[in-house]
Image (cartoon, rainbow, N blue to C red; front, side, top):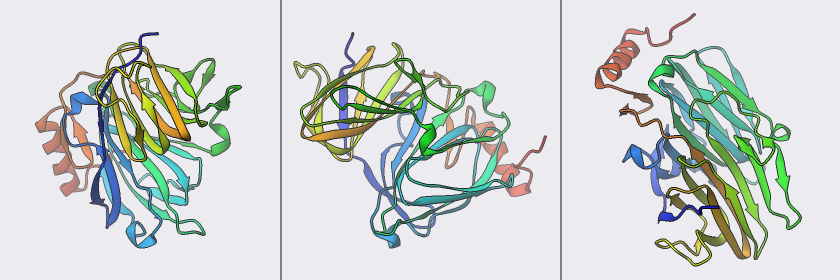
Length: 289
């Protein structure tokens, strides 16, 4: 295995989005080539309802896929196509916005007031920017979990881990998206496709990433709310300390296409962006079959 070197470790930035949701942004609205095909990653964990209860009222998307993964609390959603539902702990919503959708996401805390979750934006290639919108709502029991004899656990949201395939299908960037947990004092090697760009986001415990020699800048130790960006290779190596370690691992095939991005709409050219926002103003943004 060619171990993916650690290129950088960074802390997320505190931002306020929607109607007043306080969250941490690990990346987004920056150098899109650094994470291509991924555009944005938000950590919206919070234990105080005042920090998240205003939610994300009706807003548009076009040209991307949004991936919401809930750990605690619920996220109620609705859209311009008439879909309604709620995501609870362990559930995933993979929304392909395609040619355009208007939706809302309203978080609600659990009995202890906790609202814990993450949202990842995945770019669509030019050939699929205007595809038909769709949802894939994945229940917790549909997400396979692989546990080895040391207790290393991998929940496979998307992609393939060994012989186990995740429930999300038909995604343009053919990404892998895992929830990985290591018991204290454990090392795990996780295969990724050569040529894919990959990152990890630590959200519990503490540990190191990279080769056992510690090669690469600041490969560890890192803890909660740390983004780890990897270089080229075919495997990510992680080691936990006495606290154990839990992180999300994402890897995807770069699209290497021009990006024209403003707010919730991501296209390939400025003219396509202008057209999208003109359609919003004119009331023609939602296109029916």
